Length: 238
Image (cartoon, rainbow, N blue to C red):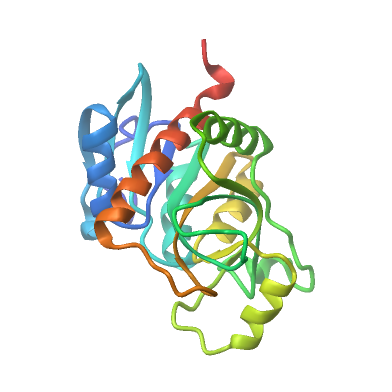
Protein backbone atom coordinates (compact mmCIF):
# COMPACT_ATOMS: atom_id res chain seq x y z
CA UNK A 1 0.00 0.00 0.00
CA UNK A 2 0.92 3.62 -0.51
CA UNK A 3 -0.71 6.79 0.75
CA UNK A 4 -3.12 6.95 -2.18
CA UNK A 5 -3.20 3.41 -3.61
CA UNK A 6 -4.44 0.47 -1.57
CA UNK A 7 -3.11 -2.29 -3.83
CA UNK A 8 -0.50 -4.67 -2.50
CA UNK A 9 2.80 -5.15 -4.30
CA UNK A 10 2.17 -7.35 -7.34
CA UNK A 11 -1.46 -6.27 -7.85
CA UNK A 12 -0.46 -3.49 -10.29
CA UNK A 13 0.69 -4.48 -13.79
CA UNK A 14 3.77 -3.00 -15.48
CA UNK A 15 1.43 -1.52 -18.12
CA UNK A 16 -1.00 1.07 -16.76
CA UNK A 17 -3.66 3.03 -18.65
CA UNK A 18 -4.68 6.28 -16.98
CA UNK A 19 -8.11 7.78 -17.66
CA UNK A 20 -8.86 10.80 -15.53
CA UNK A 21 -12.29 9.63 -14.39
CA UNK A 22 -12.29 6.62 -12.02
CA UNK A 23 -15.70 5.54 -13.33
CA UNK A 24 -14.26 5.46 -16.84
CA UNK A 25 -11.49 3.27 -15.47
CA UNK A 26 -14.16 0.89 -14.18
CA UNK A 27 -16.06 0.95 -17.50
CA UNK A 28 -12.88 0.34 -19.49
CA UNK A 29 -11.79 -2.54 -17.26
CA UNK A 30 -15.21 -4.19 -17.50
CA UNK A 31 -15.32 -3.64 -21.27
CA UNK A 32 -11.80 -4.52 -22.40
CA UNK A 33 -10.18 -6.70 -19.75
CA UNK A 34 -10.75 -10.32 -18.81
CA UNK A 35 -10.92 -11.27 -15.12
CA UNK A 36 -10.64 -7.63 -14.03
CA UNK A 37 -10.25 -7.17 -10.28
CA UNK A 38 -10.56 -3.91 -8.37
CA UNK A 39 -7.19 -3.24 -6.71
CA UNK A 40 -7.77 0.28 -5.42
CA UNK A 41 -10.67 2.23 -3.92
CA UNK A 42 -8.78 4.76 -1.78
CA UNK A 43 -10.50 8.18 -1.97
CA UNK A 44 -12.77 6.76 -4.65
CA UNK A 45 -9.94 6.60 -7.21
CA UNK A 46 -10.67 3.22 -8.73
CA UNK A 47 -8.03 0.95 -10.19
CA UNK A 48 -8.46 -2.46 -11.85
CA UNK A 49 -6.06 -5.15 -13.02
CA UNK A 50 -6.94 -7.82 -15.57
CA UNK A 51 -5.86 -9.44 -18.80
CA UNK A 52 -5.98 -8.21 -22.39
CA UNK A 53 -5.16 -10.85 -25.00
CA UNK A 54 -3.06 -12.72 -22.47
CA UNK A 55 -1.21 -9.63 -21.26
CA UNK A 56 -1.59 -8.12 -17.81
CA UNK A 57 -2.92 -4.54 -17.65
CA UNK A 58 -3.97 -2.09 -14.95
CA UNK A 59 -6.48 0.65 -15.67
CA UNK A 60 -6.32 3.29 -12.94
CA UNK A 61 -7.93 6.69 -12.57
CA UNK A 62 -5.62 9.69 -12.34
CA UNK A 63 -8.02 12.47 -11.37
CA UNK A 64 -8.13 15.89 -13.00
CA UNK A 65 -5.07 18.08 -13.35
CA UNK A 66 -1.33 17.61 -13.10
CA UNK A 67 -1.09 17.61 -9.27
CA UNK A 68 -3.51 14.68 -9.05
CA UNK A 69 -1.88 12.72 -11.87
CA UNK A 70 1.54 13.39 -10.36
CA UNK A 71 0.53 11.66 -7.13
CA UNK A 72 -0.72 8.52 -8.85
CA UNK A 73 2.01 8.31 -11.49
CA UNK A 74 4.75 8.74 -8.87
CA UNK A 75 3.35 5.94 -6.72
CA UNK A 76 2.57 3.63 -9.65
CA UNK A 77 6.11 3.93 -10.98
CA UNK A 78 8.12 4.19 -7.77
CA UNK A 79 6.20 1.81 -5.51
CA UNK A 80 4.52 -0.62 -7.91
CA UNK A 81 6.99 -0.90 -10.77
CA UNK A 82 4.87 0.47 -13.62
CA UNK A 83 7.04 0.86 -16.74
CA UNK A 84 4.50 1.84 -19.41
CA UNK A 85 1.93 4.55 -18.65
CA UNK A 86 -0.59 5.75 -21.22
CA UNK A 87 -2.96 8.61 -20.51
CA UNK A 88 -6.29 8.14 -22.28
CA UNK A 89 -8.54 11.17 -22.06
CA UNK A 90 -10.33 14.06 -23.69
CA UNK A 91 -8.95 17.32 -25.02
CA UNK A 92 -10.12 20.60 -26.51
CA UNK A 93 -9.21 21.09 -30.16
CA UNK A 94 -7.18 24.16 -31.13
CA UNK A 95 -6.52 23.92 -34.88
CA UNK A 96 -8.94 24.37 -37.81
CA UNK A 97 -7.87 21.05 -39.35
CA UNK A 98 -8.77 19.09 -36.21
CA UNK A 99 -12.34 17.98 -35.61
CA UNK A 100 -14.40 16.68 -32.73
CA UNK A 101 -13.88 12.88 -32.42
CA UNK A 102 -10.38 13.07 -33.95
CA UNK A 103 -7.52 11.47 -32.06
CA UNK A 104 -4.42 13.37 -30.98
CA UNK A 105 -1.14 11.67 -30.12
CA UNK A 106 0.80 14.11 -27.97
CA UNK A 107 4.37 14.20 -29.25
CA UNK A 108 5.25 16.96 -26.78
CA UNK A 109 3.40 18.85 -24.07
CA UNK A 110 3.94 22.51 -23.21
CA UNK A 111 2.78 24.06 -19.95
CA UNK A 112 2.92 27.22 -17.87
CA UNK A 113 4.01 25.10 -14.94
CA UNK A 114 3.82 21.56 -13.59
CA UNK A 115 4.34 20.03 -10.14
CA UNK A 116 7.90 19.25 -11.33
CA UNK A 117 8.71 22.73 -12.65
CA UNK A 118 10.59 24.00 -9.61
CA UNK A 119 13.32 21.34 -9.80
CA UNK A 120 14.45 22.69 -13.18
CA UNK A 121 14.98 26.24 -11.88
CA UNK A 122 15.64 28.44 -14.95
CA UNK A 123 15.44 25.57 -17.48
CA UNK A 124 12.31 25.22 -19.62
CA UNK A 125 12.30 21.44 -19.80
CA UNK A 126 10.56 20.02 -22.90
CA UNK A 127 8.66 16.84 -21.93
CA UNK A 128 8.05 14.43 -24.81
CA UNK A 129 6.36 11.10 -25.47
CA UNK A 130 8.11 7.76 -25.82
CA UNK A 131 8.83 7.25 -29.52
CA UNK A 132 8.07 3.51 -29.51
CA UNK A 133 4.63 4.06 -28.01
CA UNK A 134 3.94 7.05 -30.25
CA UNK A 135 4.80 5.25 -33.47
CA UNK A 136 2.91 2.11 -32.42
CA UNK A 137 -0.19 4.13 -31.54
CA UNK A 138 -0.05 5.94 -34.87
CA UNK A 139 0.19 2.64 -36.73
CA UNK A 140 -2.74 1.21 -34.75
CA UNK A 141 -4.88 4.29 -35.40
CA UNK A 142 -4.01 4.37 -39.10
CA UNK A 143 -4.84 0.67 -39.46
CA UNK A 144 -8.32 1.43 -38.14
CA UNK A 145 -8.78 4.35 -40.52
CA UNK A 146 -9.08 6.77 -37.60
CA UNK A 147 -8.52 10.47 -38.08
CA UNK A 148 -5.34 10.98 -36.07
CA UNK A 149 -2.99 13.94 -35.55
CA UNK A 150 0.52 13.91 -34.10
CA UNK A 151 2.11 17.02 -32.61
CA UNK A 152 2.36 19.32 -29.63
CA UNK A 153 -0.38 19.87 -27.06
CA UNK A 154 -0.75 22.16 -24.07
CA UNK A 155 -1.26 20.89 -20.53
CA UNK A 156 -3.11 23.59 -18.65
CA UNK A 157 -3.39 23.91 -14.89
CA UNK A 158 -6.60 25.94 -15.31
CA UNK A 159 -9.85 24.56 -16.72
CA UNK A 160 -11.73 27.87 -16.71
CA UNK A 161 -8.96 29.99 -18.16
CA UNK A 162 -9.32 33.73 -18.55
CA UNK A 163 -5.98 34.17 -20.30
CA UNK A 164 -7.19 34.19 -23.89
CA UNK A 165 -3.85 35.64 -24.96
CA UNK A 166 -2.23 32.31 -24.01
CA UNK A 167 -4.75 30.43 -26.11
CA UNK A 168 -4.20 32.71 -29.09
CA UNK A 169 -0.43 32.22 -29.02
CA UNK A 170 -0.70 28.45 -28.58
CA UNK A 171 -3.01 28.25 -31.60
CA UNK A 172 -0.68 30.53 -33.55
CA UNK A 173 2.24 28.19 -32.85
CA UNK A 174 0.45 25.06 -34.05
CA UNK A 175 -0.60 23.50 -30.75
CA UNK A 176 -3.13 20.80 -31.58
CA UNK A 177 -5.17 20.63 -28.39
CA UNK A 178 -5.37 21.45 -24.70
CA UNK A 179 -5.76 19.06 -21.73
CA UNK A 180 -4.57 19.01 -18.13
CA UNK A 181 -2.17 16.12 -17.40
CA UNK A 182 0.31 15.04 -20.07
CA UNK A 183 3.19 17.45 -19.38
CA UNK A 184 3.66 16.13 -15.85
CA UNK A 185 3.27 12.52 -16.96
CA UNK A 186 6.00 12.96 -19.59
CA UNK A 187 8.28 14.69 -17.09
CA UNK A 188 7.92 11.88 -14.57
CA UNK A 189 8.51 9.30 -17.29
CA UNK A 190 11.78 11.02 -18.18
CA UNK A 191 12.81 11.17 -14.53
CA UNK A 192 12.13 7.51 -13.83
CA UNK A 193 13.19 6.28 -17.31
CA UNK A 194 9.87 4.66 -18.18
CA UNK A 195 7.61 4.90 -21.24
CA UNK A 196 4.69 7.33 -21.46
CA UNK A 197 2.20 8.55 -24.05
CA UNK A 198 -1.00 10.60 -24.06
CA UNK A 199 -3.70 9.50 -26.48
CA UNK A 200 -6.52 12.04 -26.57
CA UNK A 201 -9.94 12.34 -28.17
CA UNK A 202 -11.06 15.84 -29.13
CA UNK A 203 -14.30 16.14 -27.20
CA UNK A 204 -14.87 19.84 -27.83
CA UNK A 205 -13.37 22.49 -30.08
CA UNK A 206 -12.21 25.94 -29.00
CA UNK A 207 -12.67 27.47 -32.46
CA UNK A 208 -15.95 25.90 -33.62
CA UNK A 209 -17.62 25.48 -30.24
CA UNK A 210 -18.72 21.95 -31.14
CA UNK A 211 -18.80 19.42 -28.31
CA UNK A 212 -19.60 15.73 -27.92
CA UNK A 213 -22.55 14.53 -25.89
CA UNK A 214 -21.79 12.19 -23.00
CA UNK A 215 -22.77 9.00 -24.88
CA UNK A 216 -20.64 10.05 -27.87
CA UNK A 217 -17.63 10.53 -25.62
CA UNK A 218 -17.97 6.96 -24.39
CA UNK A 219 -17.92 5.54 -27.93
CA UNK A 220 -14.86 7.60 -28.84
CA UNK A 221 -13.20 6.61 -25.58
CA UNK A 222 -13.58 2.96 -26.57
CA UNK A 223 -11.60 3.37 -29.76
CA UNK A 224 -8.93 5.27 -27.88
CA UNK A 225 -8.65 2.48 -25.30
CA UNK A 226 -8.21 -0.17 -27.98
CA UNK A 227 -5.47 1.84 -29.69
CA UNK A 228 -3.73 2.37 -26.34
CA UNK A 229 -3.76 -1.35 -25.59
CA UNK A 230 -2.48 -2.23 -29.06
CA UNK A 231 0.31 0.36 -28.77
CA UNK A 232 1.34 -0.75 -25.28
CA UNK A 233 2.15 -4.26 -26.43
CA UNK A 234 3.24 -3.69 -30.03
CA UNK A 235 6.94 -3.97 -29.23
CA UNK A 236 6.45 -7.32 -27.51
CA UNK A 237 3.77 -8.67 -29.84
CA UNK A 238 4.17 -12.21 -31.16
